[in-house]
Image (cartoon, rainbow, N blue to C red; front, top):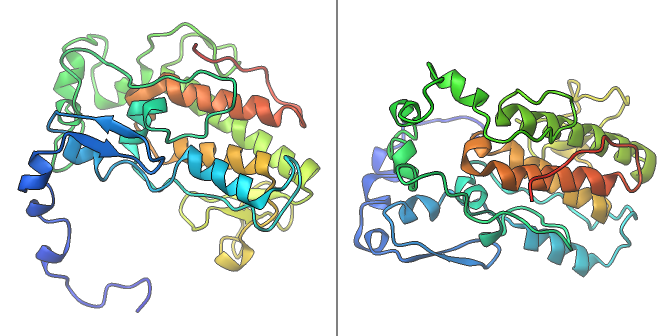
Length: 284
């Protein structure tokens, strides 16, 4: 029955030990991403990256738009929302080297985000079996951190990227501010340019729906496949892809903050060609 587990599945049919502990995984030396970009990786966490890389890319968005051939601000039913999938941490971490986000022409984007000599592999910071964050690793350098929740308040850059006037919030706060600003810009553009209000639900496929009553949120009965948003323009498709890219990596602020800040800021400013947006900034 769809949406229901009718029987207990044998553990061997899930992601069993052999999925990671096998000869091929142990000898991985490169990882191919959905963008068709290849990253050389000789460390043990290559096996993590083989799955935690998402299922789409900025190149896929670009190719889809080119195939449809619609003008930048023309709604077209053939322009789709492409979903990165969840937990694409490797795509975030390697940034432009993996091509996970939609990168705007004429802009430079951060590649692999090097943290330090003690946090270079996935399993330096995560338990490889549970993905639980190894809190003790953080406090070796960040002596102001007293709990896992405090990690969100770490700040290494003084830029006010989300233009909210707060230069003391953690980098996670900067990203959340930009993410919210992008959503506001998406909704403004959808209504005023695409001509169809839009709303997002993080737990319902395909995530973006027609906002039937224009109240800015997904109400009961709106989050269903039959009400999926179908008025995307190429400009809007780029922005919603990046919105989802950041939404589905909850550790993006640690994996590669510069890259996701760049993606969010550029998406906001691109929509700003047509609707009013805050003047955000980005790390170069």
